[in-house]
Length: 111
Ligand SMILES: [Zn+2]
Image (cartoon, rainbow, N blue to C red; front, side, top):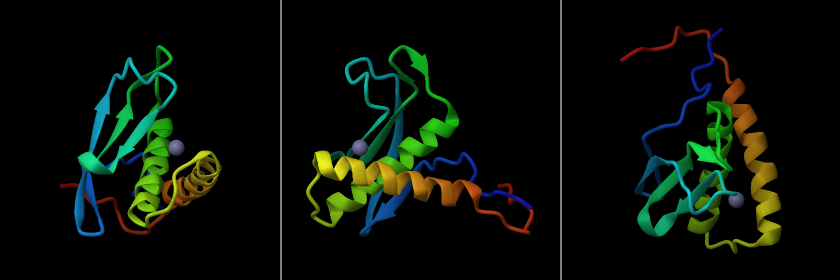
C-alpha cells in the first residue's frame, strides 16, 4: 500500500476558480502562528520556523490543511473569529488525518 498524499504540500491549488500559491517563510514577526491564509494575496504562507524552532513536515502539513480550511471558509463568506478558530483547528486536524492516511494499491507515480 502507498500513501500518495503523505507529507505532501502542493505548490498551488485552486479554490473557486482562483489559483492559490503556497509559500514558505522563516517569519520573525508572527512567531506564534505556523501559517497564514491570505485570500487577498491568493496565497498561503507556511512557516519553516516558529518560536525559534524548526517546524516538522508533519506539522507543516497540518498547518497547510488548517490554512486551507480558513481559505475555504473565507470564500464561503464565513466569519473568522475566536469560535471559528476552534472549529478550523478541529475540522482541519480530522481532514489532515484522512489525507495523510489515504492508501492506494497503485504504485506511487513519479514525474
Ligand atoms: Zn487558524
